[in-house]
Image (cartoon, rainbow, N blue to C red; front, side):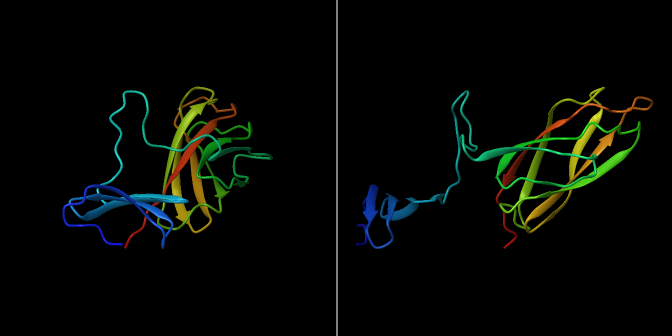
Length: 162
């Protein structure tokens, strides 16, 4: 059932099982079972609530054996605890994160939560592929090895290039 040219508000679309939102007869967004879509983007103006994932979307994993050992964590957000093997001053270690939620166009955001010995180890994403991404952990300290178990927070931002 099409909306009138002056219709503003919402309407349940039975054929597509979704709630459509209209402004002056134009559909500007909808909510379906697993999707909220807006033609104007999502924004938050709340002082302490933002846009992100809810409880249940995240997971945790701990790396074993060495800092170059890959891990598997199939969630769109979470925390990775690294192994405590020594990362020498000025050295790097790269490991693969196998993650079924990741697609090749996605953007992976990382932050170091805690655990680095001298707070000089920095994680970066060095590659993204369908089903995985690589993290390179670099110890920027000139003379101190990092022997702490770093906790790296991550979030997947779903993106496309077309």
